[in-house]
Length: 158
Image (tube, rainbow, N blue to C red; front, side, top):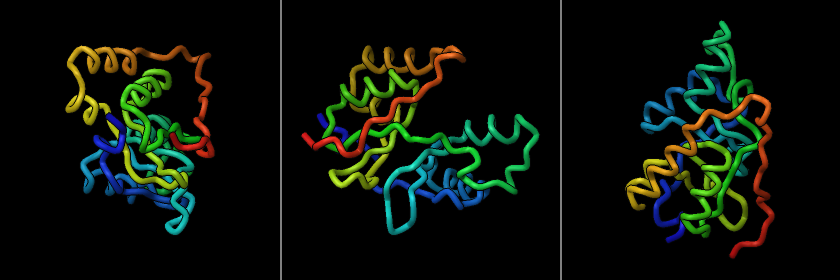
């Protein structure tokens, strides 16, 4: 099965200039915990991701005023992505490797077309495999091992 079969298509997105208040409102409206950050409304290349945890840990916990910040101030960048034609096993590997619960999905042109979450995989995968994925992404990362490897968007589609 490919990511295309289980992703949430056409997710809410923001730009780097979007206020954190707007990002949080998007999360509430979309009932999600992550909003992909795109270059511009007319250029849907993923440049980062803002999660509910990013907002809490990078602003509130540090005493910052989230009402005065934009997505760019707290986003995780570069974003880890998968392609819409990737097999579910590949998505699971990416999520485990990067200890992430959600990952933007891009099409052949590198434009965002969806997002896949741990819950999406749980609905379509075996309980054993889902349990292993939850364990892997929930294992705390060591602080010194926080480098992110980004999957190149220019890689040819399968």
